[in-house]
Each structure stands twice: as structure tokens, then as C-alpha cells.
Image (cartoon, rainbow, N blue to C red; front, side):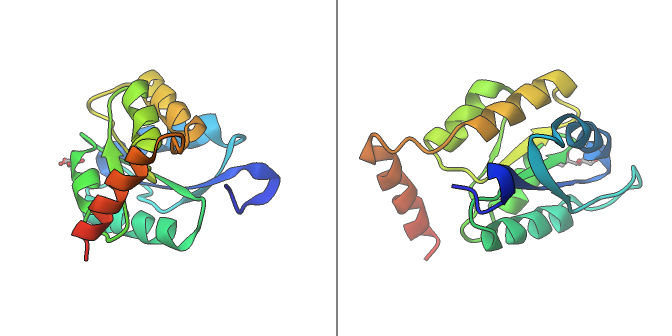
Length: 154
Ligand code: RB5
């Protein structure tokens, strides 16, 4: 359930230099479908992905219903860094099916993409699948597994 106007989902988006151009393209493509808050970076100048992973993760945790989108060269650094923030479940994917499953089975709040791995079309498809999916509550096994992961954070 979104806390934001018109039922639009708030999406905190961030990238490093390697993901900057794809971030700008996805903002352009999806700006009418979601409310983006751009957490940087703002150029292709070299920078450190954990800074942006942390910023986006902390904002997602403070905004119920919000999602995150993090882009670096591979998506891997962003996902490793975001998953170090307690309460975050970040999924690094390269196609739409995994993006959908990340929400339906894992209740991931953050999608991580690799700009050097997939092109704009696959990235857009993956993000759209992530946006459109929600946790599958029809079977308690997913929630049970998520609770087991939460236990690991204690
Ligand atoms: C930057 O060169 C690159 O290491 C970074 O974007 C990312 O792919 C790390 O996981």
C-alpha cells in the first residue's frame, strides 16, 4: 500500500557513475508512473556506490510503501551495500521474472540493476515488473522465510 498521492509509488533512485546514464533514462521513462526522488549521483564522474546505496536504503526504510532502485556497473556492489542496512532486502537482477519474484517471494524493497550488464530495455522491463508485483500473501511460507531473515539481523 502506498502512502503517496494518486496511488503512485515513491521510488528513491540512486546510482554511481557507471549507472548514471541508465538512471537518467529510467527517470525519463517512468516519471509519469512513479514519484522519483533522485538521490544522486549527478554525473559520470567517478564516485563510490556504497554512499548511494546507504542513502537510498535509509530513505526507503523511513517511507512506508516506498521502493528503491539502485544502479551501478553490475548491480552487485549496490546490492551488497544495500543489504548491509538492517531491514533492507535488495535484489540484483538481470531480467523481469527475477524482479517480479523478488517482490512476490522475498518482499524486496530495492531493485539493483547493472548498467554494464543489461541495456535500457531489459532494465525498464525489470523495473516495471518489480513495480507491478507485490508480496504473495496467499501462502504463509514466504512470510515465514522473510521472518527467518529478520531473525538473522538481531
Ligand atoms: C565501478 O567501476 C564499478 O565497480 C561499480 O559500478 C559496480 O559495478 C560495483 O559493483
